[in-house]
Length: 161
Ligand code: PNS
Image (cartoon, rainbow, N blue to C red; front, side, top):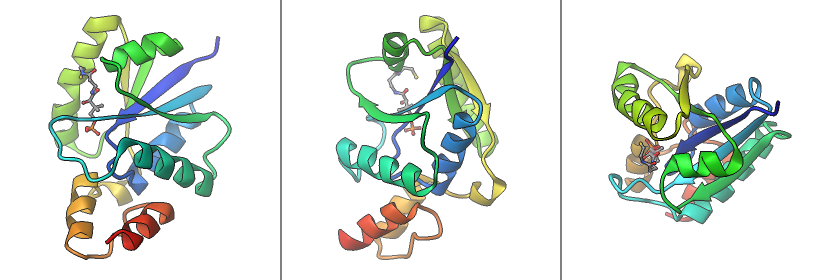
């Protein structure tokens, strides 16, 4: 059986922590679908297509290729995407108890909606303090985000100041 895992998120922008989790998922599952989803609770920095493109560049640069597909979903529930591609598992990165509290209700709802289970993976603790919202803030105020994001993202943000 081909086991497909979906790694969803806003990825606005993708961080080194995200890439770490995607790489770990790619080492466990046959196929990994990284799915960029608009989160209406967050004000966006980058258009969805740009986020997809930056993730694609970052996974190639990071050597995380072969079984990873990057796409976006705007047709309704995330579990509808899972159903469409035959994925039974979502993967989320957990940096701290704060993430557990944020992710747990979503995991339960996704299981209740469609029987899709959520697996939490721990990124390298070196990335525990890194979040897209911090990156957006630092980049927006002219700070250096290179330590927190893949090279492609750092270059993109620097050239769009
Ligand atoms: O990176 P984020 O912003 O924490 O990701 C949250 C996201 C996009 C994964 C979540 O908001 C989501 O799954 N949205 C899709 C809509 C949906 O299916 N909602 C109901 C289940 S949570």
